[in-house]
Length: 325
Ligand SMILES: NC(=O)c1ccc[n+]([C@@H]2O[C@H](COP(=O)([O-])OP(=O)(O)OC[C@H]3O[C@@H](n4cnc5c(N)ncnc54)[C@H](OP(=O)(O)O)[C@@H]3O)[C@@H](O)[C@H]2O)c1
Image 1 (cartoon, rainbow, N blue to C red):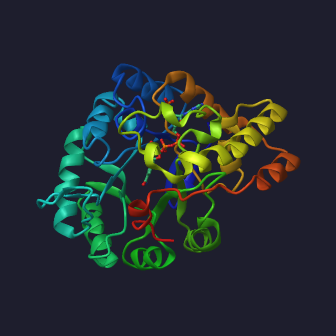
Image 2: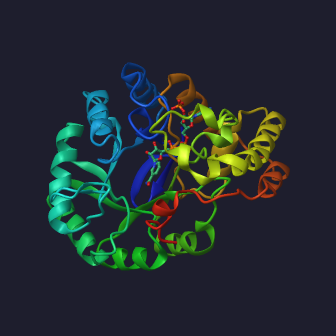
């Protein structure tokens, strides 16, 4: 495993997204023992960056990680997120990045994760009712107290990133970025590079779609967010299959798996980028982590650049409203 820097934070070039072990995807929560083995295998393979959020479950994903990391906390750059739960009463899926809410959130996350500090603490979505300066100031205080080590944002636009960074250095922005979701290349990525901020692409496998393993929209269980997602439904789903098929063809040409191609493409975009593919299975964490050694040729990169554009938004209408671009 190679290592890179997100700002001044060293992380493995490929991380592990833990969300799907407990939340949001079919099979979540069905086999915690295998999920814990997956975390341990990732650490054995040199993965350091592990990603969760208080909203995943809610709370159960942080609890699971707390259990998995007992005795191995020091090997991990542990990242979690606040801001999608209002601890003042409104509850889950209510934006609140006010200082008092962040204080309440951090104590819960620390307790569930079984640790005295969070290495990278992200605002999960920008809160239009709280000036980002107040949010950044609150995280800066937690950093001064040693409860948090680094500050991150998720799905924030260029203006928010600049304003936050002016209050306290932003170490990383975590946003959706993959072969079929490239919206941040034009406006966000240049700002990150100008300011020396790292990029953590989430859903780097397109929620599994780019691996070619997702072929039947009827297979998504109740609670799987792909069920109502515009890219995964109806005519869009069928049309997008051309993308998965082409990634599969390029994988065959490269002697790699489609998941490895999707990750190797992200790694080829710069050494300030550390994707966090999600899996709850040992075999897949081994496969995904091995993408670190896949070198794409310029002909393969060119073919990937020519993939057909994805059809459909990345989220439902309500979800799209929470994204800054
Ligand atoms: N900041 C945000 O707003 C935000 C939003 C979404 C996600 N995230 C973070 O990003 C992480 C990853 O995103 P994601 O889970 O949405 O999507 P992803 O990493 O693109 O894909 C995960 C899906 O692909 C499957 N998969 C993984 N490796 C595979 C392989 N080698 N072959 C075939 N299928 C494979 C997984 O199934 P199995 O688990 O069954 O292997 C799972 O269904 C999350 O865990 C979370 O930490 C952040």
